[in-house]
Image 1 (cartoon, rainbow, N blue to C red):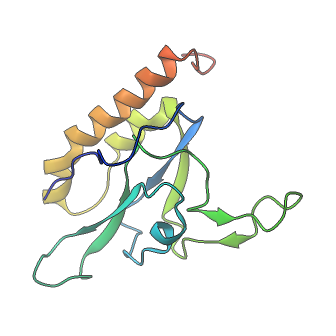
Image 2: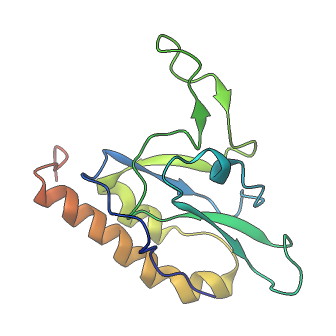
Image 3: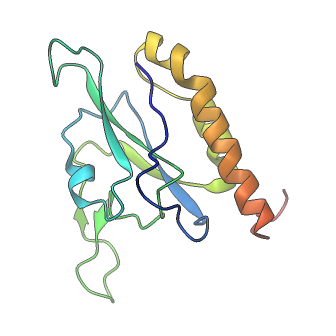
Length: 142
């Protein structure tokens, strides 16, 4: 059970300041975040092919995420930034790009999935940090 980055959509123009990270242990796979994502960067992971929904959770494709924060909250008007919570389980957090490697290192979920996918997520996190650094977006103290 592994994922490959989506190749059907073009890469975003720049790396955002922060990207969405979903805690698989808190995610129920309800897909609320997938419904609202404007760039379709969230995929549902099914742990058991023969029992869809059981042991499911969502994961963000960091190569596609634009850091819009809509998967966490929906803004109602410009003066009120975030009022409607999207993820009912608070399983999603926005992680600054320099912190992605540490977040990928803390990956949660079923042990077999973590073992099979940790290196893939670490590589994706390192790729985002490198893109941000190449664009001159280093965070202070890096």
